[in-house]
Length: 502
Image (cartoon, rainbow, N blue to C red; front, side, top):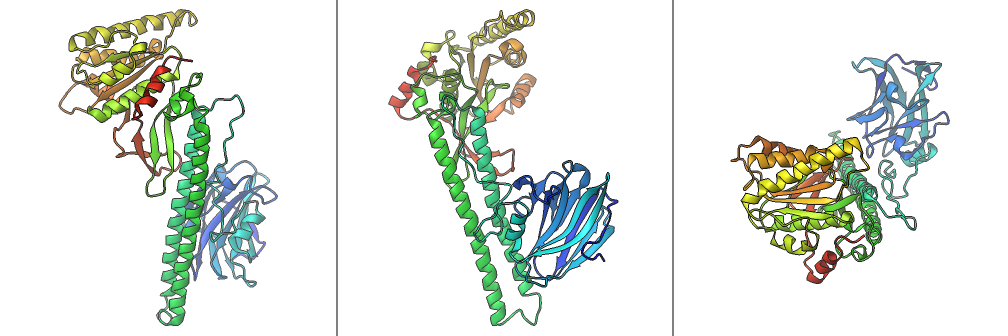
């Protein structure tokens, strides 16, 4: 059993910090410098931020991997409780063998305790028992080590999900795809903080209710009822604080999107944006739909994909909803680059509205019968092959006119060789200027290897709001609603009138 200030060499490269107490305990850890200060709020591990470089929260333990820590960093292992309570702490190696134990009994009303310090020393690692307490709880402890805290019911402002900050666009600068992607990241992290806070509030409620009935002698009566009432009240306060923070974040992001909409390139802006009627610059992305989470609130974030497209966009379906989505994507792709032209292959004649809207920018007559499909696709692939050859000898000599190729009704009306030609277009360097949009349903009856390869290579978009999307930062679920052309005929004509403009 260690005493405060006692230290020893650390022989394990991975250490687990665990705690036992007579009441629920929150574990946390700080990755700090020699002044015991964090470099940023991301250097804290606790219930709302379970991981940082070299340290993670693993169930009821903090796990430290010293070889994965930033150079020169040290780690403080700590606890927080709702009221002063003695804690027994243990450091173990990955096999569960005990490295050291240390008991801390707060004598001055402290509810947050620093228990251990893991630190480098002359090329090796050591650990030290601390025992320092904070009567102000986790909030005071976080402030002491450089982390901003809230005055609300929740003890700590979520370090991993900082308040989204307005992304002011400098004068004369056009926001890019990365601007909108950053807003999506802010929304995702805000949502993760909201979900995590609610889960923590429920977890804490369960622990406190369990503790209230643990002793048969005190599980009934006025004191027990009061303890349960306090537990429910704390849960409600934590939930309310989390919801208010999320509402504030969402309102700020919504306002930021509203301001940005007038400065975005047309291909990523809303259809009503003034960007469609002003002189436009080339875009590095297109809007394909919106992401929302109805159970979390009204926030809707645009989902964009970067340009140039490195794989086809496949719209899953063959009904009128599919036609609306395909038409919207084609218009946005045409608006993304000056001088863009469109090729339409539509053997079943389902894209009449798209053909009507894009007549001024046809690259050639639309293919409206099965007999013309092979010649069109082979011609495009052969031309791209020649362009690839030209690029290999003199990249500056090849003229790459931006093109949009729309294929409707796949796989019906397309032979095996036709699908091979489309696959060629996805592989040839001389076809990188061609953005491919495919409309079709997954047909399990058609046994065609080329179709399967093309289907698997494409990026798929559903045509209803039943689609789901998992964000890449927190893996939380979002509802995807595809973009469609505006219902307002006047607005639609205004959009079409500017096709090909710069």
